[in-house]
Image (cartoon, rainbow, N blue to C red; front, side, top):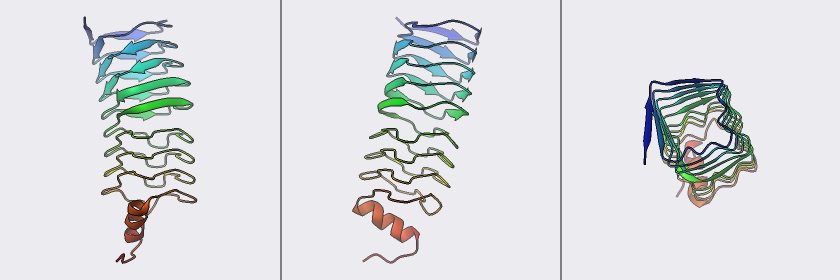
Amino acid sequence: METTAQDEVYRDDDWYAEDLTGRRYVDCTFRDVDLTEATARGVTFESCTFEDCRFNACELESAAFVGCDVRRTSFFGATLRGSKLAGSAFVDCTLRPLTVSGGQWRGVTMRGANLSKLDLSGVTLVEADLADANLSGSTLAGCDLSRAVLREADLRDADLRGATLHGTDLHDARLGSTRLDLAGAVALAEQLGALVS
């Protein structure tokens, strides 16, 4: 049964290994809350604020962070399966190591985030803001990166094979040994002014 909390403030709480399955939080604020090794299936956070929290080693399945502001929060060793991070902003967060299996990250903001060597295969990153992010050595195979912002993003040694790059400008991204399939190579060549025929 779903339990909803709204406009609540949680400060200095210890939710270690808490089971958050089925809970829904709306317009709530979490400050210095320890969610280490928490488990959750279907937990939803809507328009919530997180500051200095810890999701270390947590297991989140079909979780949703919708329109959330997440700052200085650690996801070290966390697992996200089929989760939604729509329209949420992650600022100065620890996002690796992180295990990701699918998910909808539409409109997520992770500017300057260290996402190096993560496997993000198949994640939907439509309109994601990844400017200045470190994606070196990451696997983005099969991702939908349509209209994503990759300005000054580090894509060296990244795998973009099978990724959808419609409306995505790679011109200002940092490339080097970046793996692209034919469609990606053509898109890049056209952005650099080549006439592909």
